[in-house]
Image 1 (cartoon, rainbow, N blue to C red):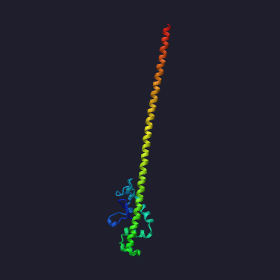
Image 2: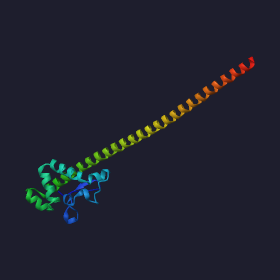
Image 3: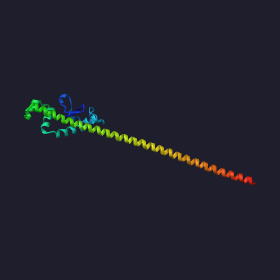
Image 4: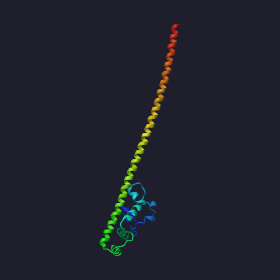
Length: 178
């Protein structure tokens, strides 16, 4: 099927208007429809085909038939009405309701993509915060280890000074006895 998203709304594209069949174009390689991680671009990727296909399959048969005849087969309202054995007004109404339902499905998918993008951003922010906290903890642990080493050095110097003081005191006491 031919489909396109313009301004967040899903449409069927007609060859006569210069659009390209998504399946023939290989949308994943198309520069026109990038797969960047934005909600609009996600809808414009291969996932759009699934959204449109699902929306179409969920339509009542008379709505789906009228929409496909108009948008894909490019039939006139009069020809569709004759083929479906109904009035032109009914055909227009069916096509309008079908478009509304397809657009609603596209909007729902867009909202879901935005929700997932926000969730992904929150997870990325949490991971970044966790990495920063881990780095800060490592820095503090390194500072603590350095401070502990400095304390041990000072204790060793104090012990050595005390030992030298004891020697000097003993030497002074020995000298005093003589």
